Length: 292
Ligand code: NAP
Image (cartoon, rainbow, N blue to C red; front, top):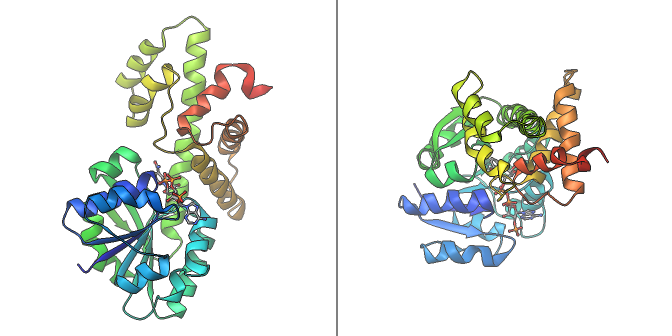
């Protein structure tokens, strides 16, 4: 593949671009906070001055940004993607956004002659570091085929889901389920503790039964210790719950469990826990902070 551009070096973008470098891709990076590029440069990346500069230099550019506002800003603002995108260039947005945002970006890029793929991912910091993400792509099939070698390095499996919007929707469904599960898990941990049971024993029991899953196994021990080092920031989980609820509204799907979970994540944000891992929602159940 030609040189790849990478916009957004947060928890996920840094790990994903590092993986590309490790596997021999030439990568040009850009991040709003420039200092976050330094570590990538040490590993062989070059730095673009702006999103437009990266697009100019690279045939294919990947973005991994926090939310719809960030994804739109990087494309539409001054020195943004639109200024240099055109025929023969592809833009792949791997951020988690809603289908409407993705379609808006797609329309603007294709109007300029470029091609577009949305490709949000399932999997957190560790799978990103290990190249074990699940990639949920939709949009221009030819672009999907062209960037597949990069997806193969970043992920363990890629899906092509058809028209733009389907990747975004699939990702929101997955994260809606995950967020609801995290709330049930937090309540279970606190209920065990307050009713005199050992939480580590609960984790062992869960792990041997039908609801065993990697998330409980990975997050449970640190939650018991009250440690929430951010792999998936809580503020992003709440953004995804909010976007999934909007998708539910559009489709008249009742989602009382997701709605209650969204409230718990909002409560956690109001308590200043937004930059911690999403498992910090546990703190809203542990004391009466959550119901005050
Ligand atoms: P993060 O660590 O918070 O990084 C966010 C990135 O977006 C940073 O590079 C940040 O730049 C950039 N950004 C934010 N606002 C911007 C703006 N207005 N203009 C330009 N850049 C902006 O988030 P993350 O965990 O890497 O997540 C990135 C995306 O992947 C999110 O959509 C998230 O929902 C999704 N995701 C995350 C995980 C996970 O486990 N972490 C898993 C799957 C999907 P600065 O450095 O300048 O702040």
